[in-house]
View 1 (spheres, helix red, strand yellow):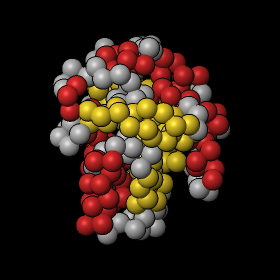
View 2: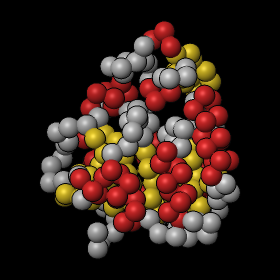
View 3: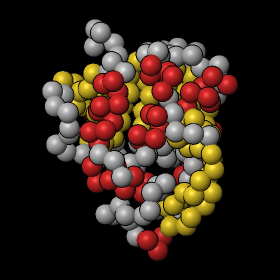
View 4: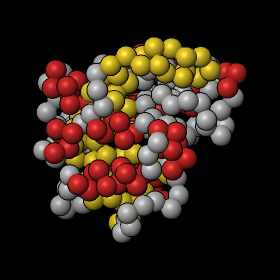
Length: 227
């Protein structure tokens, strides 16, 4: 997770998320993007934010309360390929952004400032079905390399193209901690008919014509034919 999201992320969301729509933020941290999503969709829309780190979640909860966003629904849990409990390497205050399901290996991580806790992961398809969510307009993922597992848990919604846009952080370094390459995510979504774009300055999308990425950053995928 970036300490501060770049302007292109907010510009992308501003151009593609409308009042009354539904957004999901996986890896919400303290809520910077969740709050912006809630502002964009307004009281007639819905935002569902997932953050398993208890320290980050406490701040997320405070930020929700301070902004009075009743349509922002926050959950102290994660999403993954299956419904299960698992070990989570939890960054202590000041290190929350480096929390991960993988063994600690982030270049900016100080191993002395982590603790391992048990967290629950939900399978995205199952959770959304139980919550009555049939369509997601924007799904944002930033889970320090665990993105492939999250997407595998959305296989039904992806197959049926019920997720319009996916905004995702990709990094070979972080995905390598989960023993896959970022290009595996490109292939997974392309198999469902999604097209990939690099996210550039002020939200400009540049079609990705390769089967791999050349740098870590934020990317977008869509099944919309008119993107």
